[in-house]
Image (spheres, rainbow, N blue to C red):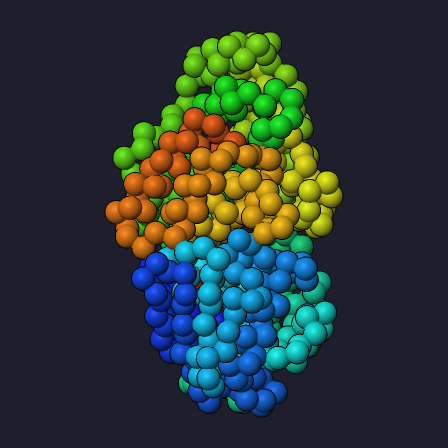
Length: 460
């Protein structure tokens, strides 16, 4: 999508928001109404002019939970189709159901991948066959399984892409992709892990390492078995040696986490909240207090992505030290996520599950989607694999999302972080850097939260 598509704004790895298809924007005093001035002279890659009507259509569609698109997980309880308005020929206005201070970041940037702009009336079922957009490239051929070829868009509104063409290749696993880079078959390995591809850090490659919010959040079903008791959830969390994981799995290319979505890269993260440390003796006491001093067995589903299987093995070994037997089931992404709905997804249904969440530029997405009480009407809590329901957490999350003042954000974040340490529906032991490797003669690839941009790429 980032080859062919564009969004209203662009967020870089410094978390700065830049104009893109929107030239500027302004909000009312409480961040419930946002108005964007839309760039003129933009064309889709078939030469058709882009208008405000196309933008309104895109957002009305993506905000409609009846259609079932992925953006509903972000827009749930915030934006409905009725909240998207055309204002003349040059402006679009979003009237939100609740305030969102980071709307130019969270709602309309490439971070919300599904809202790349498509033509008015476009049939989404055709998207992967046609890949329409206003971006630097247009599709020549494409396959969901293999990848495709993309050429410079002759209708692009700004500076043309430097590469005449980009060939996108999909690989069955990380090792195959790393081998392709090592053999010179590809120029860029878009994302690799230290655990599986440590050789890429040893020289001979241009490696970009950016502190990020990438994490393998592990949830424990708060409504099932022994994990109903928060003491048991706390006990499992206390078995983890977080600095040890950062050293062993990531060779320092990560930051220690504190069992919440608040990564060190976020300005709103409250760094005064005490850090959780490994404490096996306390963990055993908590199990005894919960009445399961002899331990128990539990199923743990893990997505086979990047470092997740290696980290899951550490979870298994750590939990075993206090008598918890985690029976691991590592699955391909298609099997693991299933239909991504409750009752039809190992991710959302298994007692313990580990999923990969990457490159979010604000904590709001994970707070809303993974930790708020599930509401099928709004879509909030659609990724709540812990089945966690806490009214106080819901209230604090809504306040945080709508707060403009950074000092107040940090105060609210501290309350949420403290609450999550107490309830422990999830563990987040680290936030991994985003790692991209390029062949020695390749330059200009621009990593952003959510992916890469190739339009300034050059090759010796």
